[in-house]
Length: 287
Image (cartoon, rainbow, N blue to C red):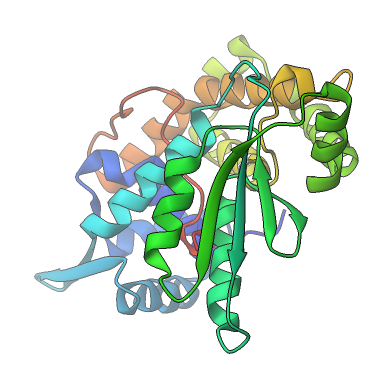
């Protein structure tokens, strides 16, 4: 796996450092990134860029530079954590949320933002300007509309009355065949890591690397998976199995990984609200 320094920094803050006061010395985060073979100069460049983008503030303690989370970044980390760990499982009410927008040709940037935000909320594209979700997201569409007054965005609740047609719509809005294949590959790749006894005895450095690796691979799914109700899922749909595997491995590796990080930064890393709910997606992927 090729590590991305920017994502690693945000993941370490989101999964560990936020639970140790939300700030860390440059020397400590440099040591943590060295575990992933990231050079000190690369760490400094990425932290500097993130600070300029408003994700971090800095202060001096003697000759040391200390990086701290901004409230805005913490808010986004919470939002991202919820997106990964709080799976939406609902009974199918037979209703779709439909978002339809009209954007002036001169506002291409607005059109792209609408696409990104609808995709972020799990909508699938039925046509160039029509998006569907099998969940009740009317309020989310209205918020998107309010944020882009130059566009005309309509939110509708609708249904076909025919489950066969609904399944066809789902297959048109999302590439379920490719998504299912990727879930099955994820399961094959990480099933061997689902070992409570082994992980309880694992080396902290190895646990941190394995935990970051499984998160790096799983984090892409929430952007692609609409979490279809069971009635709309293809047969033997692997999404739930992959989610349970991810949660189990993440939980099992948590104590050793957190202890390793604690040893480097010199203070205890708490577990947060839940043992498994420590990690977030990279803020750079947020529209």
